[in-house]
Length: 236
Image (cartoon, rainbow, N blue to C red):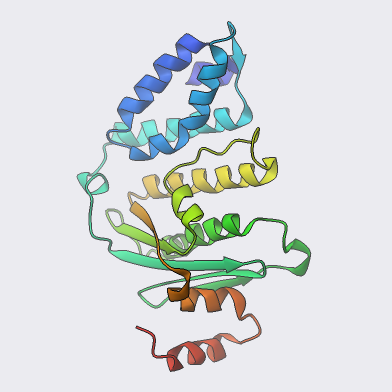
């Protein structure tokens, strides 16, 4: 990996061997699978030539693999590999005007998008960012500890899928949004593995996402007014 980054290029034979070894590492670091698609695409193109340059996205994926390798060398708890009941559950939502989310422990957040930045990102991207921010806040608050298991609930099936795979490409998608999605996905994966946290994502119907929907949209209400409104609804 170091040689590939230093030279800025690689061969089909080297890529094939590297991808095979990284796939073996996924037995203890499952997130490896999320970031192999661009390297596999590079392998397919490398078979047509002797050498092929690394794209910036592939180079960043390789740097992330080094983070995973370091964690694998330290050892990985079996609690991060087993299918488990979540210890923390989060809900999030977004709209062109804002993002919001909350935990079942009662902590909530919201962010109003400035008027000059609205409609510059797809709602799927905003949904994905909101789903990443919500557990991140609890990491900052140190409410999540090593060995905990987080479940992020979202009413966007696209965002739910992006939490499990990152086959984004600047060649086929909007390059700016693809780059942002990759940066968000890499930072989330790094944060979870370095803090020893297991995470899942799950879709649920939008008509059940009342609280997070209100957090993302009702920016005309103060925090106390919005809290009183939601409590008055007697939601489960």
